[in-house]
Amino acid sequence: MFDDDQGLYTIGTVSELLEEHPETLRVWERNELIRPDRTGYQRKYSSNDVKRLKFIKYLMHKKGLNIAGVKHLTAMYSCWYQRNCKGGAGANQSNLVSVNESKDCWKIEGTFCLVASDKAEMCNSCDMLRNCTECTEKH
Image (tube, rainbow, N blue to C red; front, side):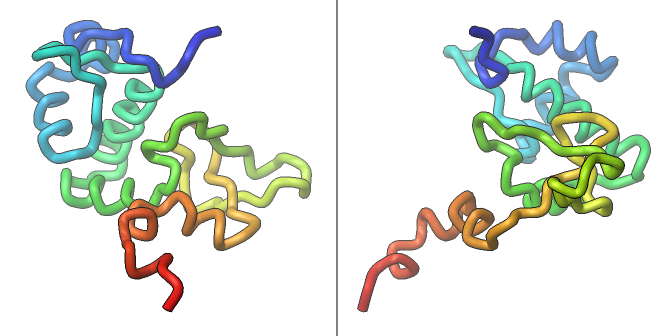
């Protein structure tokens, strides 16, 4: 089965797909907006990386954000680097799914992020909590 998180595409291929210069992609990587797989010195971008890059481009070119703004905004997406992110949902879908209409989904264009049904769900995916030894120790 195809893995959307497997690095398959070279920087040249991705830059052509996005119509961005390869150096632009390198700048975005240096600023930690994207983390492609690395094999030696060669970058390999996954399908999800391409979706992230499209979202970054959208935020910069359509919404007018700079690198710092994009970095700040994408930090609020708990699923930005999460494997197997299911993506968002449309605002017109049934009431079974709650969406945050102020937060575009990075993975599926034209949809919105799902609202976490349980705040613990957001905390469990937070790097800060996972890396904090004092946070989970019982005193």
